[in-house]
Image 1 (cartoon, rainbow, N blue to C red):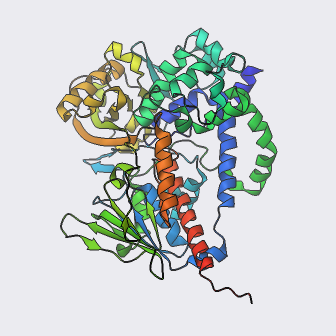
Image 2 (image 1 turned 90 degrees about the horizontal axis):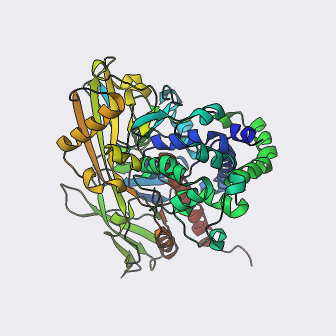
Length: 556
Protein backbone atom coordinates (compact mmCIF):
# COMPACT_ATOMS: atom_id res chain seq x y z
CA UNK A 1 0.00 0.00 0.00
CA UNK A 2 2.74 2.44 0.95
CA UNK A 3 4.65 1.70 -2.25
CA UNK A 4 1.50 2.37 -4.23
CA UNK A 5 1.16 5.77 -2.57
CA UNK A 6 4.81 6.52 -3.14
CA UNK A 7 4.44 5.72 -6.81
CA UNK A 8 1.91 8.49 -7.32
CA UNK A 9 3.75 11.51 -5.98
CA UNK A 10 6.13 14.48 -6.36
CA UNK A 11 7.26 17.11 -3.89
CA UNK A 12 6.34 20.69 -4.70
CA UNK A 13 8.92 22.86 -2.97
CA UNK A 14 7.80 26.41 -2.43
CA UNK A 15 11.36 27.34 -1.60
CA UNK A 16 12.66 27.41 -5.12
CA UNK A 17 15.42 28.43 -6.37
CA UNK A 18 16.84 31.20 -8.05
CA UNK A 19 19.47 28.55 -8.85
CA UNK A 20 16.76 26.06 -9.66
CA UNK A 21 18.87 23.02 -10.48
CA UNK A 22 18.85 21.61 -6.97
CA UNK A 23 15.10 21.90 -6.58
CA UNK A 24 14.74 19.28 -9.26
CA UNK A 25 17.10 16.92 -7.44
CA UNK A 26 14.98 17.00 -4.31
CA UNK A 27 11.67 16.79 -6.11
CA UNK A 28 12.86 13.79 -8.13
CA UNK A 29 13.87 11.86 -5.05
CA UNK A 30 10.56 12.41 -3.33
CA UNK A 31 8.62 12.22 -6.59
CA UNK A 32 6.79 9.18 -5.31
CA UNK A 33 5.86 10.74 -1.98
CA UNK A 34 4.59 14.26 -2.53
CA UNK A 35 3.04 15.01 -5.92
CA UNK A 36 -0.09 15.33 -3.85
CA UNK A 37 1.20 18.42 -2.06
CA UNK A 38 2.21 20.08 -5.30
CA UNK A 39 -1.05 19.40 -7.09
CA UNK A 40 -3.15 20.63 -4.22
CA UNK A 41 -1.04 23.77 -3.84
CA UNK A 42 -1.27 24.43 -7.58
CA UNK A 43 -5.05 24.28 -7.37
CA UNK A 44 -5.06 26.78 -4.54
CA UNK A 45 -2.86 29.09 -6.60
CA UNK A 46 -5.21 28.84 -9.56
CA UNK A 47 -8.21 29.60 -7.33
CA UNK A 48 -6.36 32.60 -5.93
CA UNK A 49 -5.57 33.77 -9.44
CA UNK A 50 -9.20 33.48 -10.43
CA UNK A 51 -10.40 35.36 -7.37
CA UNK A 52 -7.79 38.04 -7.94
CA UNK A 53 -8.56 38.55 -11.61
CA UNK A 54 -9.02 42.15 -12.63
CA UNK A 55 -12.56 42.92 -13.76
CA UNK A 56 -13.39 45.20 -16.69
CA UNK A 57 -14.83 47.88 -14.43
CA UNK A 58 -11.54 47.98 -12.53
CA UNK A 59 -9.62 48.52 -15.76
CA UNK A 60 -11.87 51.43 -16.68
CA UNK A 61 -11.47 53.00 -13.24
CA UNK A 62 -7.65 52.90 -13.25
CA UNK A 63 -6.87 53.43 -16.93
CA UNK A 64 -4.36 56.22 -17.35
CA UNK A 65 -3.14 56.15 -13.75
CA UNK A 66 0.63 56.40 -13.27
CA UNK A 67 2.66 53.77 -11.43
CA UNK A 68 6.39 53.79 -10.67
CA UNK A 69 8.16 50.42 -10.48
CA UNK A 70 11.54 50.41 -8.75
CA UNK A 71 13.74 47.58 -10.01
CA UNK A 72 13.93 45.84 -13.40
CA UNK A 73 14.42 42.27 -12.27
CA UNK A 74 11.74 39.73 -13.19
CA UNK A 75 9.45 40.89 -10.37
CA UNK A 76 9.50 44.51 -11.47
CA UNK A 77 9.27 43.74 -15.17
CA UNK A 78 6.39 41.29 -14.65
CA UNK A 79 4.55 43.91 -12.58
CA UNK A 80 5.16 46.62 -15.19
CA UNK A 81 4.02 44.34 -18.01
CA UNK A 82 0.79 43.46 -16.23
CA UNK A 83 0.02 47.07 -15.32
CA UNK A 84 0.63 48.28 -18.86
CA UNK A 85 -1.58 45.53 -20.27
CA UNK A 86 -4.36 46.84 -17.99
CA UNK A 87 -4.08 50.35 -19.40
CA UNK A 88 -1.95 52.00 -16.73
CA UNK A 89 1.03 54.23 -17.42
CA UNK A 90 4.19 52.68 -15.97
CA UNK A 91 7.73 53.88 -15.47
CA UNK A 92 10.47 51.47 -14.39
CA UNK A 93 13.59 52.68 -12.58
CA UNK A 94 16.66 50.43 -12.55
CA UNK A 95 19.94 51.34 -10.86
CA UNK A 96 21.95 49.01 -13.10
CA UNK A 97 22.64 49.52 -16.78
CA UNK A 98 20.75 46.36 -17.76
CA UNK A 99 17.50 44.57 -17.01
CA UNK A 100 17.06 41.11 -15.54
CA UNK A 101 18.46 41.28 -12.03
CA UNK A 102 19.83 37.82 -11.30
CA UNK A 103 18.91 36.54 -14.75
CA UNK A 104 22.12 37.13 -16.63
CA UNK A 105 23.10 35.29 -19.83
CA UNK A 106 26.32 35.64 -21.82
CA UNK A 107 27.09 34.68 -25.42
CA UNK A 108 30.81 34.56 -26.18
CA UNK A 109 33.12 32.60 -28.49
CA UNK A 110 30.45 30.08 -29.42
CA UNK A 111 29.44 29.55 -25.79
CA UNK A 112 26.21 30.43 -24.00
CA UNK A 113 26.04 30.45 -20.24
CA UNK A 114 24.02 31.85 -17.36
CA UNK A 115 25.72 33.57 -14.46
CA UNK A 116 22.57 33.58 -12.34
CA UNK A 117 19.48 31.39 -12.51
CA UNK A 118 19.97 28.61 -15.06
CA UNK A 119 16.43 27.21 -15.20
CA UNK A 120 12.91 27.86 -13.96
CA UNK A 121 9.60 26.00 -13.71
CA UNK A 122 5.92 26.70 -14.26
CA UNK A 123 4.78 25.75 -10.77
CA UNK A 124 3.14 29.18 -10.52
CA UNK A 125 0.23 29.84 -12.92
CA UNK A 126 1.46 33.41 -13.48
CA UNK A 127 4.52 31.99 -15.26
CA UNK A 128 2.52 30.05 -17.83
CA UNK A 129 0.26 33.02 -18.52
CA UNK A 130 3.27 35.28 -19.00
CA UNK A 131 4.99 32.87 -21.39
CA UNK A 132 1.81 32.63 -23.46
CA UNK A 133 1.28 36.39 -23.54
CA UNK A 134 4.89 37.07 -24.54
CA UNK A 135 4.93 34.37 -27.22
CA UNK A 136 7.89 32.61 -25.59
CA UNK A 137 6.67 29.03 -25.91
CA UNK A 138 8.70 28.48 -29.08
CA UNK A 139 11.84 29.67 -27.31
CA UNK A 140 11.47 27.37 -24.31
CA UNK A 141 14.30 24.87 -24.02
CA UNK A 142 13.98 21.72 -21.91
CA UNK A 143 17.08 19.88 -20.63
CA UNK A 144 18.09 16.59 -22.17
CA UNK A 145 18.15 13.73 -19.64
CA UNK A 146 16.39 15.89 -17.08
CA UNK A 147 15.76 12.89 -14.81
CA UNK A 148 19.44 12.01 -14.42
CA UNK A 149 20.70 13.88 -11.36
CA UNK A 150 23.46 13.03 -8.95
CA UNK A 151 24.39 13.38 -5.29
CA UNK A 152 27.93 12.76 -4.07
CA UNK A 153 28.18 9.98 -1.47
CA UNK A 154 31.52 8.78 -0.11
CA UNK A 155 33.36 10.82 -2.73
CA UNK A 156 31.46 9.33 -5.67
CA UNK A 157 28.52 10.77 -7.67
CA UNK A 158 25.45 8.55 -7.26
CA UNK A 159 22.38 8.93 -9.47
CA UNK A 160 19.18 9.74 -7.60
CA UNK A 161 16.43 7.13 -7.94
CA UNK A 162 13.39 7.99 -10.05
CA UNK A 163 11.13 5.06 -9.13
CA UNK A 164 10.50 2.71 -6.18
CA UNK A 165 12.70 -0.06 -7.54
CA UNK A 166 15.64 2.30 -7.93
CA UNK A 167 14.98 3.62 -4.43
CA UNK A 168 15.36 0.13 -2.98
CA UNK A 169 18.63 -0.54 -4.80
CA UNK A 170 20.13 2.97 -4.60
CA UNK A 171 23.20 3.62 -2.47
CA UNK A 172 22.22 7.25 -1.78
CA UNK A 173 20.62 6.23 1.54
CA UNK A 174 21.04 3.36 3.94
CA UNK A 175 18.41 0.66 4.32
CA UNK A 176 17.38 2.16 7.65
CA UNK A 177 16.68 5.56 6.07
CA UNK A 178 14.74 4.01 3.21
CA UNK A 179 12.44 2.30 5.69
CA UNK A 180 12.13 5.51 7.69
CA UNK A 181 10.89 7.31 4.56
CA UNK A 182 8.39 4.57 3.77
CA UNK A 183 7.14 4.41 7.36
CA UNK A 184 7.02 8.17 7.94
CA UNK A 185 3.24 8.14 8.56
CA UNK A 186 3.86 5.95 11.61
CA UNK A 187 7.28 7.07 12.82
CA UNK A 188 7.18 10.86 12.57
CA UNK A 189 7.25 12.68 15.88
CA UNK A 190 6.63 16.18 17.12
CA UNK A 191 9.48 18.29 18.39
CA UNK A 192 7.15 19.56 21.11
CA UNK A 193 3.58 20.70 21.59
CA UNK A 194 4.61 23.97 19.98
CA UNK A 195 5.04 22.43 16.53
CA UNK A 196 1.38 23.04 15.73
CA UNK A 197 1.65 26.64 16.94
CA UNK A 198 1.79 29.09 14.03
CA UNK A 199 4.24 31.25 15.96
CA UNK A 200 6.62 28.38 16.70
CA UNK A 201 10.04 28.37 15.08
CA UNK A 202 11.88 25.33 13.81
CA UNK A 203 14.79 24.88 11.44
CA UNK A 204 14.57 22.98 8.17
CA UNK A 205 17.04 20.49 9.61
CA UNK A 206 14.95 19.81 12.72
CA UNK A 207 11.75 19.41 10.72
CA UNK A 208 13.05 16.88 8.21
CA UNK A 209 15.06 15.04 10.84
CA UNK A 210 11.85 14.39 12.78
CA UNK A 211 10.07 13.08 9.70
CA UNK A 212 12.78 11.27 7.76
CA UNK A 213 15.90 11.00 9.91
CA UNK A 214 19.33 12.62 10.04
CA UNK A 215 20.73 10.84 6.99
CA UNK A 216 18.03 12.32 4.77
CA UNK A 217 18.93 15.75 6.13
CA UNK A 218 22.64 15.20 5.50
CA UNK A 219 22.45 13.73 2.01
CA UNK A 220 19.28 15.17 0.48
CA UNK A 221 18.10 18.29 2.32
CA UNK A 222 21.55 19.77 2.90
CA UNK A 223 22.70 19.68 -0.75
CA UNK A 224 19.26 20.79 -1.92
CA UNK A 225 19.14 23.96 0.17
CA UNK A 226 22.82 24.59 -0.56
CA UNK A 227 22.03 24.59 -4.26
CA UNK A 228 18.77 26.54 -4.12
CA UNK A 229 19.61 29.19 -1.55
CA UNK A 230 23.33 28.85 -0.81
CA UNK A 231 22.25 28.20 2.78
CA UNK A 232 22.26 25.24 5.16
CA UNK A 233 19.33 23.40 6.78
CA UNK A 234 20.33 24.44 10.30
CA UNK A 235 20.10 28.16 9.45
CA UNK A 236 16.84 28.12 7.50
CA UNK A 237 13.41 28.62 9.02
CA UNK A 238 11.06 25.80 8.05
CA UNK A 239 7.88 27.89 8.00
CA UNK A 240 9.45 30.48 5.70
CA UNK A 241 11.47 28.10 3.52
CA UNK A 242 8.86 25.35 3.08
CA UNK A 243 5.57 26.96 4.18
CA UNK A 244 3.39 24.41 2.39
CA UNK A 245 4.96 21.43 4.15
CA UNK A 246 4.93 23.36 7.43
CA UNK A 247 1.18 23.84 7.07
CA UNK A 248 0.63 20.22 6.04
CA UNK A 249 2.21 19.07 9.28
CA UNK A 250 0.13 21.50 11.32
CA UNK A 251 -3.03 20.05 9.78
CA UNK A 252 -2.22 16.36 9.46
CA UNK A 253 0.96 15.52 11.36
CA UNK A 254 2.50 13.15 8.85
CA UNK A 255 3.66 14.77 5.60
CA UNK A 256 2.69 11.73 3.55
CA UNK A 257 -0.72 11.35 5.22
CA UNK A 258 -1.40 15.05 4.73
CA UNK A 259 -0.45 14.82 1.09
CA UNK A 260 -2.78 11.87 0.54
CA UNK A 261 -5.73 13.50 2.28
CA UNK A 262 -5.36 16.82 0.50
CA UNK A 263 -5.07 14.98 -2.80
CA UNK A 264 -8.31 13.10 -2.29
CA UNK A 265 -10.06 16.25 -1.04
CA UNK A 266 -9.11 18.10 -4.21
CA UNK A 267 -9.49 15.25 -6.69
CA UNK A 268 -13.08 15.97 -7.73
CA UNK A 269 -12.52 19.65 -8.34
CA UNK A 270 -9.34 18.97 -10.25
CA UNK A 271 -11.11 16.60 -12.65
CA UNK A 272 -13.74 19.20 -13.43
CA UNK A 273 -11.16 21.93 -13.89
CA UNK A 274 -9.09 19.75 -16.21
CA UNK A 275 -12.08 19.09 -18.46
CA UNK A 276 -12.86 22.77 -18.78
CA UNK A 277 -9.23 23.92 -19.02
CA UNK A 278 -7.29 21.86 -21.58
CA UNK A 279 -4.16 23.96 -21.02
CA UNK A 280 -3.73 23.07 -17.37
CA UNK A 281 -1.00 20.56 -18.12
CA UNK A 282 1.41 23.17 -19.43
CA UNK A 283 4.63 23.19 -17.45
CA UNK A 284 4.44 19.47 -16.60
CA UNK A 285 7.80 18.90 -18.30
CA UNK A 286 9.74 20.30 -15.38
CA UNK A 287 12.62 22.76 -15.49
CA UNK A 288 13.37 24.77 -18.60
CA UNK A 289 15.43 27.62 -19.96
CA UNK A 290 15.26 29.53 -23.25
CA UNK A 291 17.18 29.34 -26.49
CA UNK A 292 19.87 31.89 -25.81
CA UNK A 293 19.68 31.64 -22.02
CA UNK A 294 17.47 32.93 -19.24
CA UNK A 295 18.14 36.55 -20.21
CA UNK A 296 15.61 36.07 -23.02
CA UNK A 297 12.77 36.41 -20.50
CA UNK A 298 13.63 39.86 -19.08
CA UNK A 299 14.72 41.09 -22.50
CA UNK A 300 11.34 40.14 -23.96
CA UNK A 301 9.53 41.82 -21.08
CA UNK A 302 11.66 44.91 -21.61
CA UNK A 303 10.71 45.04 -25.30
CA UNK A 304 7.07 45.34 -24.27
CA UNK A 305 7.93 48.70 -22.69
CA UNK A 306 8.76 51.84 -24.62
CA UNK A 307 12.04 53.72 -24.26
CA UNK A 308 10.35 56.30 -22.04
CA UNK A 309 8.87 53.62 -19.78
CA UNK A 310 12.15 52.13 -18.60
CA UNK A 311 14.98 54.15 -17.10
CA UNK A 312 18.26 52.27 -16.74
CA UNK A 313 21.17 53.64 -14.74
CA UNK A 314 18.61 55.36 -12.52
CA UNK A 315 19.17 54.79 -8.82
CA UNK A 316 16.22 55.91 -6.71
CA UNK A 317 17.41 58.09 -3.84
CA UNK A 318 14.15 59.22 -2.30
CA UNK A 319 10.40 58.76 -2.40
CA UNK A 320 7.80 61.19 -1.15
CA UNK A 321 4.12 60.60 -0.50
CA UNK A 322 2.13 63.83 -0.68
CA UNK A 323 -1.07 63.47 1.32
CA UNK A 324 -1.92 67.10 1.95
CA UNK A 325 -2.60 68.11 -1.62
CA UNK A 326 -5.94 67.84 -3.38
CA UNK A 327 -4.74 64.72 -5.18
CA UNK A 328 -2.64 62.27 -3.19
CA UNK A 329 0.40 61.05 -5.06
CA UNK A 330 4.03 59.95 -5.00
CA UNK A 331 7.16 61.59 -6.35
CA UNK A 332 10.61 60.07 -6.81
CA UNK A 333 14.10 61.44 -7.19
CA UNK A 334 16.89 59.43 -8.76
CA UNK A 335 20.43 59.84 -10.00
CA UNK A 336 22.51 58.21 -12.73
CA UNK A 337 26.26 57.78 -12.96
CA UNK A 338 26.56 60.66 -15.41
CA UNK A 339 23.84 63.03 -14.28
CA UNK A 340 22.89 65.04 -11.27
CA UNK A 341 19.90 64.22 -9.14
CA UNK A 342 16.59 64.63 -10.96
CA UNK A 343 12.98 64.75 -9.86
CA UNK A 344 10.38 62.65 -11.66
CA UNK A 345 6.67 63.30 -12.32
CA UNK A 346 4.02 62.34 -9.82
CA UNK A 347 2.73 58.78 -9.55
CA UNK A 348 -0.44 57.31 -8.12
CA UNK A 349 1.31 54.23 -6.70
CA UNK A 350 4.75 52.66 -6.28
CA UNK A 351 5.85 49.03 -6.56
CA UNK A 352 9.21 48.51 -4.86
CA UNK A 353 11.21 45.43 -5.92
CA UNK A 354 14.68 46.52 -4.81
CA UNK A 355 16.35 44.39 -2.10
CA UNK A 356 15.49 45.60 1.39
CA UNK A 357 19.15 46.40 2.04
CA UNK A 358 18.86 49.00 -0.76
CA UNK A 359 15.48 50.25 0.42
CA UNK A 360 17.03 51.08 3.81
CA UNK A 361 19.33 53.55 2.06
CA UNK A 362 16.46 55.48 0.49
CA UNK A 363 14.99 58.61 2.00
CA UNK A 364 11.22 58.36 2.38
CA UNK A 365 8.89 61.27 3.14
CA UNK A 366 5.22 61.14 4.09
CA UNK A 367 3.14 64.30 4.18
CA UNK A 368 6.26 66.45 4.28
CA UNK A 369 7.70 64.58 7.28
CA UNK A 370 10.50 61.98 7.24
CA UNK A 371 9.23 58.42 7.33
CA UNK A 372 11.92 56.56 9.23
CA UNK A 373 12.88 53.11 7.96
CA UNK A 374 14.79 52.16 11.09
CA UNK A 375 12.27 49.37 11.71
CA UNK A 376 13.67 47.46 8.72
CA UNK A 377 15.80 44.67 10.20
CA UNK A 378 19.26 43.66 9.08
CA UNK A 379 19.02 40.80 6.61
CA UNK A 380 21.67 38.15 6.09
CA UNK A 381 22.58 37.61 2.45
CA UNK A 382 24.48 34.64 1.11
CA UNK A 383 27.49 35.32 -1.16
CA UNK A 384 28.00 33.06 -4.15
CA UNK A 385 30.55 32.68 -6.92
CA UNK A 386 29.62 31.11 -10.25
CA UNK A 387 32.46 29.65 -12.31
CA UNK A 388 31.88 28.61 -15.91
CA UNK A 389 34.55 26.27 -17.25
CA UNK A 390 35.05 24.41 -20.52
CA UNK A 391 37.07 21.28 -21.23
CA UNK A 392 37.58 19.47 -24.50
CA UNK A 393 35.69 16.19 -24.43
CA UNK A 394 38.87 14.16 -24.71
CA UNK A 395 40.01 15.64 -21.38
CA UNK A 396 36.88 14.49 -19.50
CA UNK A 397 37.51 10.82 -18.77
CA UNK A 398 34.33 10.04 -16.80
CA UNK A 399 31.61 12.33 -18.20
CA UNK A 400 28.17 12.05 -16.62
CA UNK A 401 25.04 12.44 -18.71
CA UNK A 402 22.28 14.41 -17.07
CA UNK A 403 21.37 17.59 -15.23
CA UNK A 404 24.14 18.02 -12.69
CA UNK A 405 25.58 16.97 -9.35
CA UNK A 406 25.13 18.32 -5.82
CA UNK A 407 27.67 17.93 -3.04
CA UNK A 408 26.51 17.52 0.59
CA UNK A 409 28.54 19.42 3.18
CA UNK A 410 29.57 16.15 4.78
CA UNK A 411 31.51 15.37 1.61
CA UNK A 412 34.01 18.11 2.48
CA UNK A 413 35.86 15.36 4.35
CA UNK A 414 36.68 13.93 0.91
CA UNK A 415 38.19 17.22 -0.21
CA UNK A 416 35.21 18.76 -2.03
CA UNK A 417 34.80 22.54 -1.69
CA UNK A 418 32.05 23.42 -4.17
CA UNK A 419 28.26 23.28 -3.73
CA UNK A 420 27.58 21.55 -7.02
CA UNK A 421 27.96 21.65 -10.78
CA UNK A 422 25.52 21.86 -13.67
CA UNK A 423 26.34 19.89 -16.80
CA UNK A 424 25.30 22.85 -18.93
CA UNK A 425 26.21 21.51 -22.37
CA UNK A 426 24.75 18.10 -21.50
CA UNK A 427 21.43 19.78 -20.71
CA UNK A 428 21.50 22.14 -23.68
CA UNK A 429 23.88 20.96 -26.44
CA UNK A 430 23.75 24.33 -28.23
CA UNK A 431 25.52 25.98 -25.28
CA UNK A 432 28.98 24.93 -26.55
CA UNK A 433 30.74 23.54 -29.65
CA UNK A 434 30.28 19.81 -30.17
CA UNK A 435 33.82 18.96 -29.01
CA UNK A 436 33.57 20.86 -25.71
CA UNK A 437 31.90 20.26 -22.34
CA UNK A 438 30.58 23.38 -20.57
CA UNK A 439 30.16 23.25 -16.78
CA UNK A 440 28.62 25.75 -14.35
CA UNK A 441 29.89 25.39 -10.77
CA UNK A 442 28.69 27.15 -7.61
CA UNK A 443 31.00 28.05 -4.71
CA UNK A 444 30.42 29.68 -1.33
CA UNK A 445 27.14 30.30 0.43
CA UNK A 446 26.90 29.67 4.16
CA UNK A 447 29.18 26.66 3.75
CA UNK A 448 32.19 28.79 2.85
CA UNK A 449 31.47 32.51 2.66
CA UNK A 450 35.13 33.48 2.42
CA UNK A 451 35.78 31.14 -0.49
CA UNK A 452 32.97 32.79 -2.43
CA UNK A 453 35.03 36.00 -2.39
CA UNK A 454 38.21 34.34 -3.69
CA UNK A 455 39.97 35.33 -6.90
CA UNK A 456 39.22 33.71 -10.24
CA UNK A 457 42.58 31.92 -10.24
CA UNK A 458 42.00 30.42 -6.80
CA UNK A 459 38.47 29.33 -7.67
CA UNK A 460 39.67 27.82 -10.93
CA UNK A 461 41.94 25.50 -8.94
CA UNK A 462 39.13 24.62 -6.53
CA UNK A 463 36.66 23.84 -9.31
CA UNK A 464 39.18 21.91 -11.39
CA UNK A 465 40.06 19.79 -8.36
CA UNK A 466 36.40 18.96 -7.67
CA UNK A 467 35.69 18.16 -11.32
CA UNK A 468 38.75 15.92 -11.43
CA UNK A 469 37.30 13.87 -8.58
CA UNK A 470 33.80 13.84 -10.04
CA UNK A 471 34.39 13.53 -13.77
CA UNK A 472 38.04 12.67 -14.21
CA UNK A 473 38.95 15.92 -15.98
CA UNK A 474 42.61 16.26 -16.93
CA UNK A 475 44.64 19.42 -17.19
CA UNK A 476 43.48 23.02 -17.07
CA UNK A 477 40.13 24.24 -18.44
CA UNK A 478 40.13 25.73 -21.93
CA UNK A 479 38.23 28.78 -20.68
CA UNK A 480 37.16 30.19 -17.33
CA UNK A 481 34.55 32.85 -16.61
CA UNK A 482 33.70 34.02 -13.12
CA UNK A 483 30.82 36.03 -11.69
CA UNK A 484 30.56 36.94 -8.00
CA UNK A 485 27.18 37.64 -6.39
CA UNK A 486 27.93 39.53 -3.18
CA UNK A 487 24.31 39.19 -2.05
CA UNK A 488 22.96 36.25 -4.00
CA UNK A 489 20.06 35.34 -1.72
CA UNK A 490 18.32 36.73 1.36
CA UNK A 491 18.54 34.12 4.11
CA UNK A 492 15.12 32.95 5.33
CA UNK A 493 16.43 32.36 8.84
CA UNK A 494 14.80 32.09 12.27
CA UNK A 495 14.45 35.88 12.53
CA UNK A 496 12.63 36.24 9.21
CA UNK A 497 9.31 36.95 10.91
CA UNK A 498 10.66 40.44 11.61
CA UNK A 499 11.38 40.93 7.90
CA UNK A 500 7.83 40.03 6.91
CA UNK A 501 6.42 42.28 9.62
CA UNK A 502 8.57 45.18 8.39
CA UNK A 503 7.36 44.73 4.81
CA UNK A 504 3.76 44.70 6.04
CA UNK A 505 4.40 47.86 8.05
CA UNK A 506 5.73 49.71 5.01
CA UNK A 507 2.70 48.74 2.97
CA UNK A 508 0.24 49.59 5.74
CA UNK A 509 1.78 52.94 6.67
CA UNK A 510 2.52 54.17 3.14
CA UNK A 511 -0.65 54.42 1.00
CA UNK A 512 -0.10 53.18 -2.53
CA UNK A 513 3.23 51.51 -1.69
CA UNK A 514 3.60 47.81 -2.49
CA UNK A 515 6.59 45.49 -2.15
CA UNK A 516 7.46 42.54 -4.40
CA UNK A 517 10.46 40.30 -5.00
CA UNK A 518 12.29 37.32 -3.56
CA UNK A 519 12.35 38.74 -0.02
CA UNK A 520 8.73 37.59 0.25
CA UNK A 521 7.21 34.26 -0.73
CA UNK A 522 10.15 32.40 -2.23
CA UNK A 523 13.47 32.71 -4.04
CA UNK A 524 12.74 31.04 -7.37
CA UNK A 525 12.25 32.83 -10.68
CA UNK A 526 8.64 31.68 -10.76
CA UNK A 527 7.95 32.95 -7.25
CA UNK A 528 9.49 36.31 -8.14
CA UNK A 529 7.29 36.60 -11.23
CA UNK A 530 4.21 35.69 -9.20
CA UNK A 531 5.15 38.25 -6.57
CA UNK A 532 5.35 41.01 -9.18
CA UNK A 533 2.04 40.03 -10.77
CA UNK A 534 0.27 39.95 -7.42
CA UNK A 535 1.66 43.37 -6.53
CA UNK A 536 0.27 44.68 -9.82
CA UNK A 537 -3.17 43.29 -8.93
CA UNK A 538 -2.98 44.97 -5.53
CA UNK A 539 -2.11 48.29 -7.17
CA UNK A 540 -5.10 48.04 -9.48
CA UNK A 541 -7.43 47.24 -6.58
CA UNK A 542 -5.96 50.11 -4.55
CA UNK A 543 -6.35 52.64 -7.37
CA UNK A 544 -9.91 51.51 -8.05
CA UNK A 545 -10.70 51.92 -4.36
CA UNK A 546 -9.22 55.43 -4.40
CA UNK A 547 -11.24 56.26 -7.51
CA UNK A 548 -14.47 55.07 -5.87
CA UNK A 549 -13.73 57.07 -2.72
CA UNK A 550 -13.37 60.26 -4.76
CA UNK A 551 -16.60 59.83 -6.74
CA UNK A 552 -19.33 62.32 -5.75
CA UNK A 553 -22.15 60.90 -3.65
CA UNK A 554 -25.18 60.58 -5.96
CA UNK A 555 -27.64 59.96 -3.16
CA UNK A 556 -29.94 62.80 -1.99
